[in-house]
Structure formats: structure tokens, C-alpha cells
Amino acid sequence: MKRRALVSVSNKEGIIPFVEGLVKEGFEVVSTGGTKKAIQEAGIPVTGIQDVTGFPEILEGRVKTLHPNIHGGLLAMRDKDDHKAQLEEHNITPIDVVVVNLYPFQQTIAKPGSTFEDAIENIDIGGPSMLRAAAKNHKYVTVVVDPQDYDTVLAELKDGVTAETRRRLAAKVFRHTASYDAVIAEYLTEATGEESPETLTVTYEKKQSLRYGENPHQKATFYKKPLAKDGSIATAVQLHGKELSYNNINDADAALAIVKEFTEPACVAVKHMNPCGVGTGETIEQAYDKAYEADPVSIFGGIIALNKEVDKETALKMKEIFLEIIIAPAFTEEALEVLKEKKNLRLLTVDTTKAEGKEASLTSIHGGLLVQDEDTFSFDEADISVPTKREPTEEEWSALKLAWKVVKHVKSNAIVLANDQMTVGVGAGQMNRVGAAAIALEQASERMEGAVMGSDAFFPMGDTVEAAAKAGVRAIIQPGGSIRDQESIDMADRYDIAMVFTGVRHFKH
Image 1: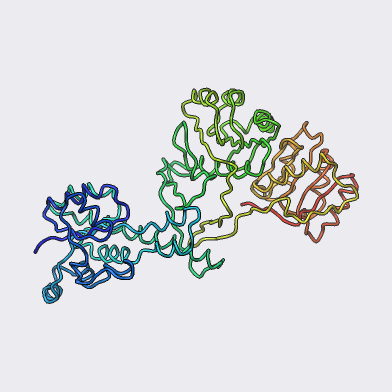
Image 2: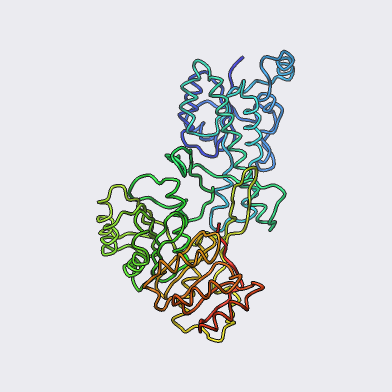
């Protein structure tokens, strides 16, 4: 019985050399639509799908391969006599090789101006059906969904594609169709506005293998969303340096999230996913100077994110210390020349002006997944009130806003001390708020003049306020909402501190 291959691809990369190889190995090639036309134009013999089904393509091509002559040829088990008899009875030729990739749904919805109708028309029906049928029957059928596998299959065809290869290719098919369906499901779910569907199917594409995970004994891989938007670490362009590590990626993501809070020139230094220094200024050089001054010890070995182009003067200063990564929208040629002298320093470009859009935050737990909205709540959205006798001065308001932007990104319990241009103390990840305040106050030390305090959650009693007041804090911003708020208010009034309530907390774990 002759060997038959079915070829129908939207991605025609490498398909002509592959089909030529099939024909040389004695395969009859069956194809449809644009793929058939491309094969014919290459001068390769090809059989139309309608010649196999005995039925024309109908409904503008919506129905062409959904036919027993196709699926019988895909699903027949060659070592079963009754299957062979039925194939002969109905004059169905088995299909030995299937080469299919799908309508470009993902590429369609990514296009500016793409409509819902465009998306629906690019949901492939026949393609996934053929792929799944062939993959299910991979004991007998070789199925190829990825052009990267063409050479492997051609190399093995002469002696017969091995069972190991067929199984590997089948697994890839089911990953591919599952991912394809997941993108469609997400698109349609978003279109309906449904927030908590009964099942959640997510898909990610491999970006790179990592040397190891959080620790050297852990394996790790970096995946990105299929439609990841510009302005994220997943879409960053690396200009120089070693490959990113697991910890690098986490820290870089944290740094980028903080620096995007600012429109004025800003610089953020991050260590272990917490900011150790944040500075702003009239120039990016001034912003870096402030971030460095905020904590010149912790910045060593840290990740730096800036929201303006890096110039030579700033690069020369950053070159003086050991840094793991520098992230910026751009680097001048002179800045690149300076920084590339450090061969391991990773330089990334990310457009910090591009908002990624609000994404769901996913946290894995053993046996499950927690899903929540991303915390994008801003100062401008807050229900601001001043419960104390004294209101903040204009300079204090500026400092309070800076502290509020930063404390949102510090691990809870979190306290941030800041003036109107920089952080001066950060207390992160403590088991109680007094402990977080003590760390921040100790770090600020002699730089307390004009400092304000930001807290990610309310004060359950007045002790933190009193400690801040005795250290020189002049204003505090916090969510409020404790049943003992009055105790904190009275303590603030006792020390002539201005206190601002936002009504919204910013826990971060």
C-alpha cells in the first residue's frame, strides 16, 4: 500500500524542502488551499484534498478535512484486521505522516485594529482535529506541528521514524493544541467579562532555560505569555552581559514595577526583590545619585532600573560599583561603551513608558493556584483624608507621595522613610510593624531631616507613631482603618505630626 502524507500549514517556513524530501521517499502528498498552491508552484506533485474526500471544500473553506476518508486514514490501527478490512471496504488509504500547523489566531488578535469577527474566523477547527487524531494514533502516524522538527523526521524516514520520536512529536502536538485553545479561551473569557471562570487554563511559551533556580540545586525555566506586552522583563532586549538567572529575573521585574511609578527622572535599586534605594531628580544622573545615597551598602550587587536614557556621566558612576543588571529605556552609545567594559554586567532595554495593562497575579501553592488582580491602585485614586490637627506642608506632600509609591512594592510588613527626592530608610518583610519601623529608622539615622513615613497597612496602636516622632519623622501616610486609629491620631497630634489616611492598604508578600 502506498504511503501518504497530509500537509496543511499556515506557517510555510521550510515546507517546500520538507515536501521534496517526502516525495523522494515515495510519499504521495495530499494538501489543501494555500499549501497545495505553494507545493504546485514549486513543481512538486500534489493531490488535492477533494480528490481524497470526493467532496469539495465548502463554507468558504470552513469544511474541507472533516471527512471519514481523512480521519479514517489517521485513526486506523494498522495491526487490527477489522480496521484494515474497513479501510479496504471504504477505499480509505492510511495516512502515515501529518504536517499541520494552525490558523494564526494569536497573531490575529495581536494586530492593531483586529476585530472580534477576525478572531473568530481564525479559530482553526480541522487543523486541531487532524493533529489530535494523528497524535492519538502516533503508534502508526508521525505528526509534525513544528518546522523545527522537519529535519529530524526526514533523517529518520528512510528506516522508519522511531517510536521514541513519534511519541515525542505527539506530546508536542498536545502541548501545542492545548496552548492554542488556552489563548482562545482567555480571549473569549475576557470578551464576556467573566472574572472567575469555573476552570482556568493558562499557557506560556519557553523563553530560555536557566542555569538553575533560586538555589543551585533547583532547576528552572523562564516562560513568557504568548501575547506579552512591551514594557515587561519578558519582552526586554538584552544588549550585553551574562545570561539572566532566576533571581535576576525576579529582581529585575520588581525594579521595573517600581520605576514605572514615576514620570520624573527616577532610579530604583533592588536587592532580593525589595527596593534598597529610590531616587528622583531633574536628570537621570541626579536620580541615580539619590538612589545610591539612599543605601550605598545594599546597592552593591543589586539591580538598577531607570526610566530615562542612560548617559555617559551616569554610566561612569554606575561602573564604579558591582551591579548585576542595569535596566533602562535606552543607553547612549557613549554609555554603552563605558558599561560594556564590564563583561558580565547585564544591560537590558525596556520601554518604561509602555503600560503592560492590568494582569492577573498568579501564585502557585502546593496543589493549587491563587489568582488576584494586580495591585495598580495609585495615590490619585485614594480617598485621601487628614485626621490630625496639622496638615502636611507642600514639601511633605511630595515626600509622602514618594513614600506611598515605594512602600507598595516593599514586602510586608513594610515601612518606608523618604524625603521629597529619595528614600532614606526601608524596613521590609518583618513580622510586626514596629520591627519594620525600627529597621527603617536605624537605616535613616542622620538623614531624618524632613523625612516622612509610609506604611503599607494601618497602625494597630500608637507605638510606631511615637517611635517615628522621637526619631524626627514629620509626617506619616498610612491606610487607616484600625479600630484603634484614634490612638495613632492622638499620638501624632501630641508630637505635631501630620498624618494622612489613604483608605487603601498595600500588602505585598
